[in-house]
Length: 187
Length: 370
Image (cartoon, rainbow over the protein chains, first blue to last red):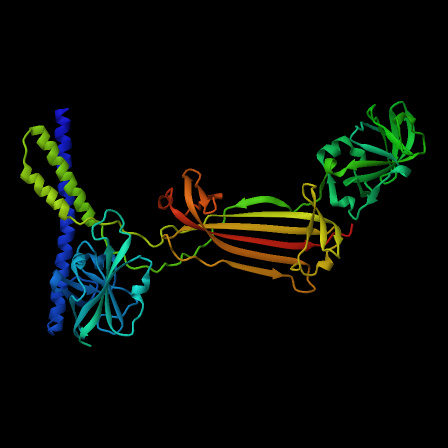
């Protein structure tokens, strides 16, 4: 009996360690790729040659919200691989350097976790190949996933950040958290 | 000469006294004798002269002439087939002569009698093409419409990490219990890490179950017994010999071409496509279409209707690939799941949508000249 307990205890500890390690590796890989994408993007902005990278998705922009310590590259899709290492541009919405409703999504448990602390009036900086833009948060709301009105085209240029809601939730999160920001500076 | 035993089921009437009978437009060729009739009355096969209605019941009419009577044995001659045979009616059988019940032994040579065999008992409508309730599984291609939705933003890895921390905590507790020593600092670290670990949701899918299931086809045919041009009523006899009346709607073009003894062919098709969509997804529209025969063509009508209903999966029989679905109105429907639909995508309690297509095609085949 004592022997069985020892075996079970060790198996539990080893399994836990393996799972934690795997999750940590994935997180570390995502963070590293995110950092590399930001560096590549900044070098590109500076006119330098890009570092060798196995990245498939091109970096459209870099999003920064200093007050909540968010710095994340924006890739050209919301695929799993893209969202593992950054934020994704929602297909069909305006491009990060363009005009209209620019929609960007990211994981609530990694890159967009800080959105829970964003308040009305918070500034959001977005660096694009076309230049630097600053947006100011004007609206925070929680919507149903099927309510796609947040993606509707707008007359002016706005930034719409999307992530799952609630931020802490066991199981499929039923809602989406929307941060809407108006263009403050930049074209 | 052959001896057959006429039972009481055979109704014998003296020819001149067959009261309250009416010759119908139907022909003996519209019916075929049952095996029982052929076995019991082989000499009557081919001697039918017409179909008459008496008190709402259809009878095949046979005419015979009495040749000889010996005791209960009656020898009859059938002019239609020029056959002679001897019948031995049951002792309880009676013949109606001038409205009076008479024993068969009292018949006299030269008398013409009529024999009436119940159509419903001894024959079936001659409908060769009927395929009753031919149920087959037809794969229905279902276009799963993409439901617009905001992106899902969660990955499984934080959950994996949280599960790992739980296992570490459990392992630590077991170790602590075994050794009897506490290391509260390690436990606190584990708990604090667990608290900080993001709890994520599983990735939801917009559309999970490709649909399609079963198509059943019912094809039936009926013989037109009578047509009322004024009221557009059709008296029909189905393949079971059941008689019923329908009223043709104005959609049945060229109604005037329908005549007695024509065959009405009705094909009813129902297909049920089942697929799951997120709760609250937009409804797919209902559709309906009707086609009628062009003027001058044979009468016919095709009508199809497609409509959506919500349902919940009540149970799944994995072995037979049968799912029981309960609609919003409580109606339970059993459907067969196509072989190419992965069963692991369907769970009891899932909300699904059923797209039901019902089609009815009615056409008319002209009667043979015989």
